Image 1 (cartoon, one colour):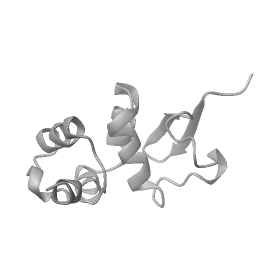
Image 2 (tube, one colour; image 1 turned 90 degrees about the vertical axis):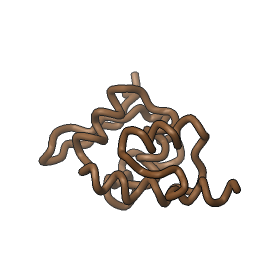
Image 3 (spheres, helix red, strand yellow; image 1 turned 180 degrees about the horizontal axis):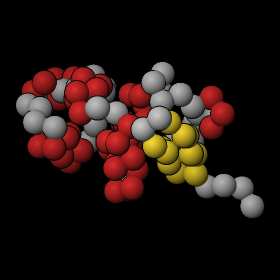
Length: 100
């Protein structure tokens, strides 16, 4: 039976993501730094609490803030959640500006 998760060991612990979350990137090529925006977009839009905790353990708060404001498409619920959790004004998000 094939594993349903992608697990990446790091010096900060293990990052575990469902394969269905990152369906379009082969697991063996997934890079936590090169694919940071994709990973954060998927986890925050479609992830579960364990994936949320996992990325928050790996990426710094500032790294997350700098990355999520550059995401091109976020639904309103996710945008406002990220705005509250990371203290970012909704108007600072790229996707907010695109939808005006």
